[in-house]
Length: 253
Image (cartoon, rainbow, N blue to C red):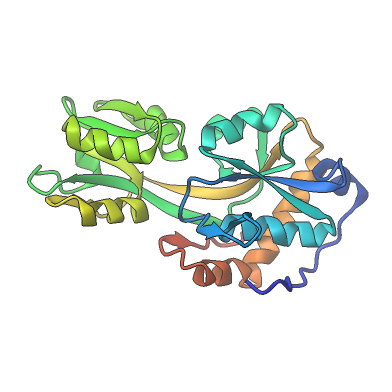
């Protein structure tokens, strides 16, 4: 986007600043392996997309330098909350991550659903969780964490990443591949005889987290920032600018 950030009407108090930028720089943990939220790199090699742009806008509000801390998967990003590796982490706000991370209200949403074979006889997401059926998905992704808590009958197999999940779906003949709808739709285009089921088994909300060991003043400011980013249309503009089809904007609440 244009380097000029919108002027969000947010007052930054000393407690929030101390909680979010104790080193004087905003270190933003980014999951580099979500193509909906990170869509490329700039000339300096920094990530670009909705998630990095949200971090940049927050750094502008705080009036500090931004430093990206990249992770190749969401699990290690969440783990680093206890390692003083980042000040904010842009990640799905699953309850399983709440022990060590405080989350802002969500700034975007993504449907999670299944890819199945067209001749499987499965026509809805509710039909996947049946005895004798198997689902393969990306370990420690927010939708995998949801499936761990909520599946009652189907067997869940966890891979080290979405591409591996897709390969196992084909090679091992699992009944369903669980993931984010936009990525599954791309899989369906390259895998003849497959289809993405309508509806979703859950909606993954993306938020801005901060280590739970920090003061609550930090996440209070994050809530105000996200609300302003939604209400001003900034998040919607980011989604449009970066071509992040499949993301939607939640109500600011």
